[in-house]
Figure 1 (tube, helix red, strand yellow):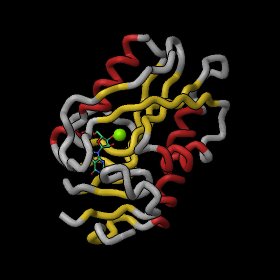
Figure 2 (figure 1 turned 90 degrees about the vertical axis):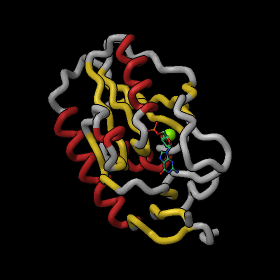
Figure 3 (figure 1 turned 45 degrees about the horizontal axis):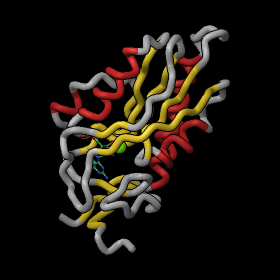
Figure 4 (figure 1 turned 90 degrees about the horizontal axis):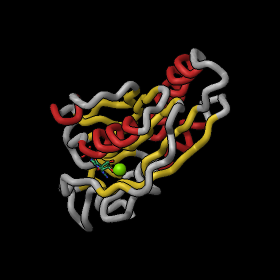
Length: 177
Ligand code: 5GP
Ligand code: MG
């Protein structure tokens, strides 16, 4: 199972500590929101599957969870195709939106989704990613909540895959180059 993983970058305990902190930080902001306007958490599948499941249990609010898909990799590639394919977007007009994704890399996925959601004129739009690579393309995309800044390496585990595998690996590891 773990033969392709070169080393662990972030252990499960550190992930869960940080996810709890992010949840607290998000809750402080959500508590400012008026009770009438609905909050929608938009989770970008499939990479955010574990992150969003853990994060949402720290958000003690009446929240609607909406899933959408985005993919930018083909098969065994570790480079994005550059042009993400988006599935159907949820309806968010007039709602407070928290957009949750696994990782910011080229930034194209989050930029595209933010643009398309903004066209619907939500009441507010904030983004949250577990990981962000410390490269210009990722750092320049607006993102209000970031779990960890990491180096530009290909990581798997805690929802993130290589060729569809390793999403179930509980820590975040770096794949053998
Ligand atoms: P973008 O390049 O558009 O910022 O990232 C698009 C998507 O590529 C992310 O949502 C994530 O699913 C995937 N991705 C980017 N970097 C990595 C990585 O290091 N590991 C894995 N497993 N997926 C990544
Ligand atoms: Mg993704």
